[in-house]
Length: 81
Ligand SMILES: [Zn+2]
Image (cartoon, rainbow, N blue to C red):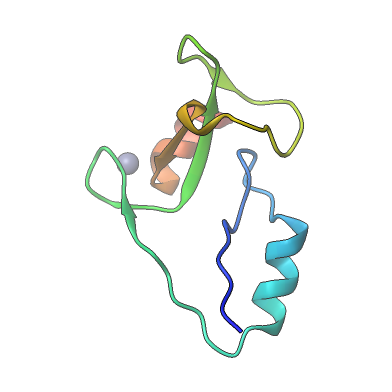
């Protein structure tokens, strides 16, 4: 079986489904994305419609693909906490 998923949410918490997939997977393949600084992006920053950082809210938000920015851990921590 082959599945895909995002590891963590906009607050750097594991998604419950991803936690179970990580626990059960025989093999992991990481699809790499690059932060604006060039480092590997591993974190998902949520923003509002004006680009302001969102720090609270539901874990999932339907239809908000344009409201996320993938960042390296350093830039995520600077903006999200
Ligand atoms: Zn960065």
